[in-house]
Image (cartoon, rainbow, N blue to C red; front, side, top):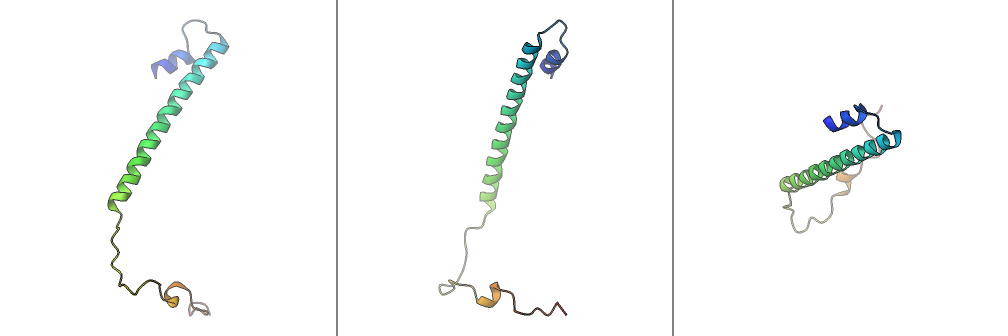
Length: 81
């Protein structure tokens, strides 16, 4: 933070173009830091989800399709008058 404060409020005179270039460099550095942090958290989130994901499914051999009534809604619902 000290570097950013030194760029924003310099003790001496700094040309406007130089100040702009320095600020752009600081923004690029922080952007890279945020991107690295996002990638790390995303990697850990995916790893945690994989660790707790259930891969075993115990279905009977003849159960390849779900029954039609368990997947679709009835034609007329009893909830509506």
